[in-house]
Length: 277
Image (tube, rainbow, N blue to C red; front, side, top):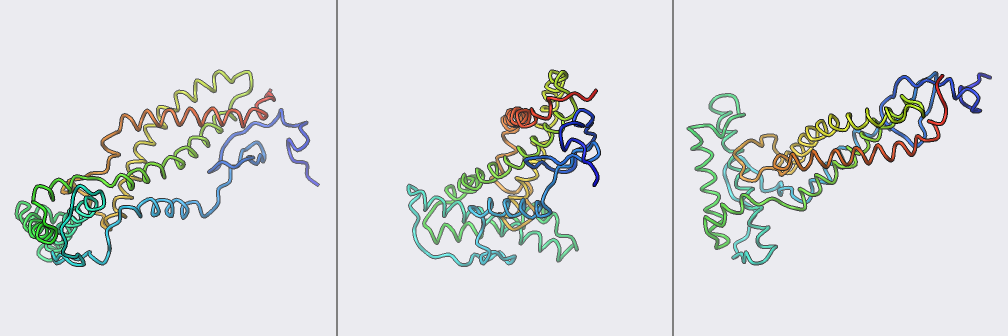
């Protein structure tokens, strides 16, 4: 029977980790001097499920979606904007009108020019504006609100949705940080621990910058799921908040990375007791 290195502790000093594969588990498996960190094959599916669940609070009612610039599936009743539920209803209606107008403009551009990617630019934006104005007039008539109130509602974000998107990304980023920090920890012996901390501190800046960019992609993907459309350009009045708080998110990424480094160093402490020489 083959002897595994480090199985009885006698060969642990000769183990020289050279690579880390994929993701972190509670106890990494060491084979031939490598650290193999397992990840379930279902991880991408789990991430997608997490993202979809985060989008549920703010999704448009799909039965109301159309490309004909028609206002459907809405009752006729006045809204009291002093009530939070009525304000949310108006917010949803105003932003749905934006979505329907954009879809109508895109479909019109596709029918006339064979490409539907820039419908908002047709006739200098007149097709989009005319449709949106018509839909907003329907909202005003059905709910006894003013044009100014509808315009203001376009700029309101769903706080529950935005919080869910940020919170759902945090554990994904934290897990990636923990993997990287444990990988760095396996590269140095106990006597080199101070150098490992220097490398970790420097890596935090790059990791946080990358995290901000990946988080923006996560946020944009969530927004596409919410509205059911991959065209989320500058014609929407309420843009996702991720792009408006980059500095705060970067600092948060640094803090989260250093916390992951602290947790990773504690978990890897027993492995660091041996020397590679």
